[in-house]
Length: 300
Image (cartoon, one colour):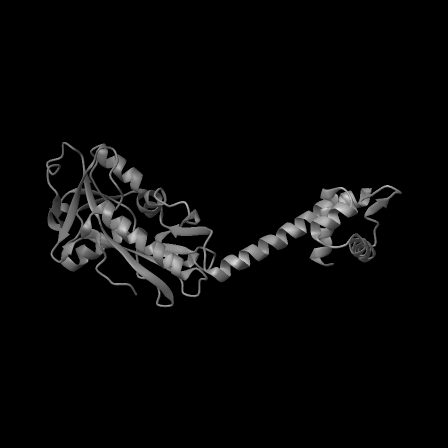
């Protein structure tokens, strides 16, 4: 069954007659009649009812017409998708990232997309498995560990890990706190599945210090809520909530931070577009959080 025969059938249905349809599809009426008879023979069903005055779709033809329209629409969509792939354009964009990154970085960035940017979809992924979303269909993955060498990637930003305290806390007027001071307080920490906790653990390991009092909580929002209730100091990379005051955490080798990376498949048909979006995301991070978050690592 040829698509052009289905297109001719649709033309007859829309035009109301063979003669009008022939003019529409730029063939002669006898040629159109022959091709419609060929379609009927192939399908084994009569699609038309012919009278002395006109040729109209039969009951079977009217039942078959929606299937013809669907097949033609799918074929047209496939051709359009192939043209998009060949041109390197990206009409739809799927971004995979951990929840905090989606909330504090990706969502504000998406609010600034331009009219000709692709339509985005986001997938929330665990930090430890975010790059595994690429083989599953994500176009761009945002993670906090260096991507594997087989992926194309850009270092986006080095985002600080914050110690959050209440406005009436003795530290509230400060801009930073040393690691040694921090571990003397009751700390509200995420589990080791989250990169702010890993960054703090690693900084403590390098300094030879240990925690004194830790309460593990399941989500960043709950950690900030408990800090606002006066139950301790929340250590996170999230933006502040509940009126909490952020303090940078300083160690002997510099501020405690997490690095943010964008990664994509090297053979992605729109690799150049993804790289351009990643570079825009880097500029957005610097504008949002300040020049000090510019990545120390160059593009891989």
